Amino acid sequence: LSYITEYDTCTTDYLLHFDFDIDLWTAGVRDGVRDLVAMLNACTDCISGAFPIGLGSSTCTLDEPANCCIRATWNSTGFIDLGTDFSTQSYFLDMRRLRRRLPLPLDLEQVEYAFGRWALTGGGIHAMLPYVHPPFYFRSVGTMLAGKLKFDKEVRSIPSLGRCSGCHGSCRVAPRAEWRPRVFP
Image 1: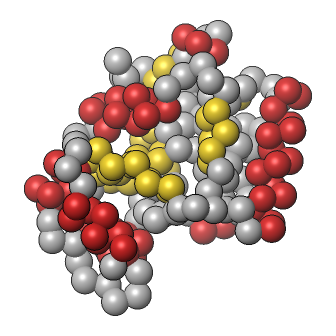
Image 2: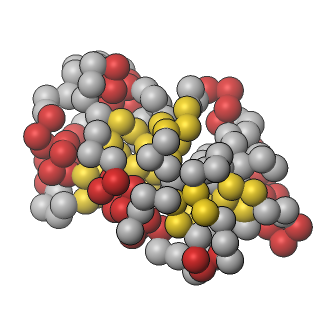
């Protein structure tokens, strides 16, 4: 019920949520919240946004453990479509869109599954900002031991990363401070 209460009591246009065990790394050169807002503005069907999960692979795609469970696809608007995979660990919701599209399908197990079912019936797209190396920001999978060890290893590896973009040709990759997805303001 905590998530539903959070949605019910939110009085702002957007809601950014992190579970207590999620770490966020940022290079301090871009505002991730502004990028999330821009992504949702560019995609009228998007209901939620997310920071990149982990650092991504050397080719700027999902890597372990995310690629085992998330059925993500590249969207030509400039983001990763997470399909039915909404994570309650960390998310960014457009509250106006959420309220217009209520009610959520009932799921007695998890709110995540309700959002997933909702995506299947046209309730909204769950989007993730694309991977880019060197990164602007990314979040951990969780800080339980395996997640924390992976996150710490990824942070240490940032100086040795090669350049890549998860935009698959639809984003312009330039010096770090100038990078932005093609359609975002």
